[in-house]
Image 1 (cartoon, rainbow, N blue to C red):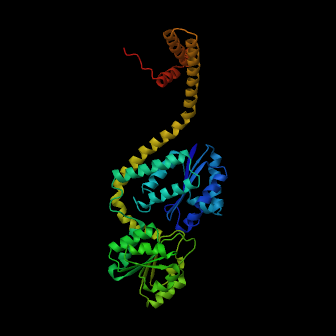
Image 2 (cartoon, rainbow, N blue to C red):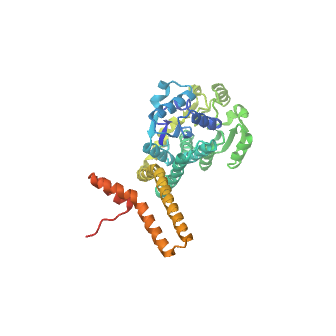
Image 3 (tube, helix red, strand yellow):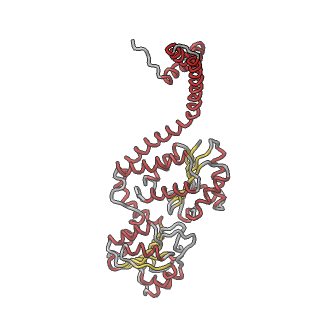
Length: 422
C-alpha cells in the first residue's frame, strides 16, 4: 500500500483557482464514492476549506495510480491539466504523512497555529468514514494525526494568543474604524468562522451585530449568544444600509452579494464607507464590488499582511512542533512498514499451530493406548522442539555452507540468540 496527499492551498493558488476545485459539503460523500469506484484508490478522504482542497488516498503501489487519481480530480472539476497542475502539490508516503500532521497542527495554515483546521480535518474524516471510504491505513493515519495535533497544542505554545482569519478580519476592521463601539457589523453565514468573528467583535466592543443566514433559526441561535439580531439572506439587501462592517463566510457556490445591492446601499448611506471581508471560497461577494467608491473589500488572500504580524511570535513554537512531527512521522511509517510482516507472521504461526496439533494428537493416542504419561510428555516436548527448529536449522546450515554470515547474523537477531559472553 502507498499513501498520496495532493491538492492546492493558499500558498500555491489564488482564490479564483481555489474556488474552482472546492468541493461543496453536500457533494463530498458522492465524490468520495465516485473516486473509489474508479479503482485507483482503496481509501480516500477530502479536506475542502476556504484555504485548501486536499485529497488523502491509500492505494496499491502502482505509479500509474497516481496519474489516475489526478486525472479523476481534473475531470471531476472539468479542468484541463494546464489549468490546475501549476498550482498542485503531491506528496507520497512519509511526505504525505508529514504534510497531514503539519496541516492538522496549524503549521501550514494562513494563520500559523490556528486551531480551526483540526476540526475541519475531523469533519473530513467523519464524512469519509460515513461514505465507507476509510480503511485500516487512513483510519490509523487520521487517528495518529489527531493525537499528534493534540500533543503539539499541549507541548508547545503554538496556540498561545489565539490568532485566526476571523481575528485578522476584525483587526483589519479596527484599522479602518478605530472605535468599533460606534459601528454595526453584518455577519453573513452562521458557521464556526462567523461565530469566531462575532466573538472577536464582541470583545472589541462592537455596537451591534446582525447575523444573516439562509436559515433564520441558525442565525437566531448565533445572534442570541452575542446580543445580536438575526435576519434571512433575502432580508440582507434592505438592511445593508445599516452595516459599516460586512464579513461573509458561507458555503454558497455562487455569490450572494452583488455590486448592484452594495451600490444602492452606499447611496442610501450618503457614501459613508463600508468595510467588507469575503472569507468564503467560492467567494460570497462579487469581485466587482471592489470597484465602488467608499467600499473597502478584502478577500482571505488580502488578510496575509495582517496575519503576518502575529506570525513572528509563534516561530519558536513552530520549530518545536516540527521536531515533534518529524518523530511522529517515523513512528507512523514504522507501523506502516510493520504491516508487511503481518502475512509472514500469520503463516509462521499457522505452521507452528499445525506442528503443535499433530504432536498433541499423537500424544493423546499414546495416552489412550496406556503408555506412561511421563514418557508421553517427554516425547511430546522432544517432538515439538525438533519439528519447530528443523526448518530454521536446515536453513542456517545451508547459509553457513554458502558463507552467508549476514544471513546467520539475521537469524541470530530474529531468533533472539545472544552472543556467547567470553
